[in-house]
Length: 250
Ligand code: 9D3
Image (tube, rainbow, N blue to C red):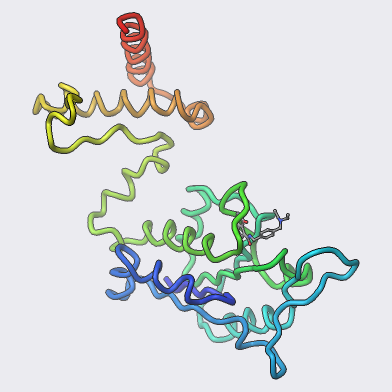
């Protein structure tokens, strides 16, 4: 998979995309990440990439010519079909379903906007528009990092162990169960008994129950989208009874 990131601030992305999981995946050649400075496509001595908005108002708008030249060069230089994504607060919200779709592409070009936004006419030159959430960040770069990271994790070989991506909470539609490691007593707080039992079926059941109750309490929206099995229903009821009992006890 080739990711190309068109940005005015390539150095914002170089470090985060060179460490840890992504750094290793790049070193081993499973993914390739290139950053291109949009300014290199701007004309004139000052290579200006922004200008005042028509109609007036505060802030600046990214000029279309450098952006579209950069997009066109990315499309032209690849033998594959490039999927060009404009990162914008107005795009489709990124979720695991979209991440899975994008993982099937072979060349993704990410266009990072800055300032108040990009000239509207650029939209015609991209294939889709994506937002990473309903909050404001200063530009497309943090969104590009998130998208490259989330998509890369689904590419075989990027995670050391093949089962990790599949077990990820969102691919199952549930939040994860709690995790514990040593010490067995941290300031008086013990490890749940089931995890110490050595009984794998009992541990799996405990984890499933915890994942269900967590999701119900924290992300009702996720739980409502699931078709729970009878066993899941039963585990959830048990968890709720236990909670009610602990409530009374305290
Ligand atoms: C007050 C109007 N602002 C929009 C909510 C203007 C504006 C602020 C910041 C326009 C763009 C930006 C920069 N953000 C992005 O380019 C961006 C983004 C985001 O802010 N949130 C979630 N996803 C994304 S993807 C790109």
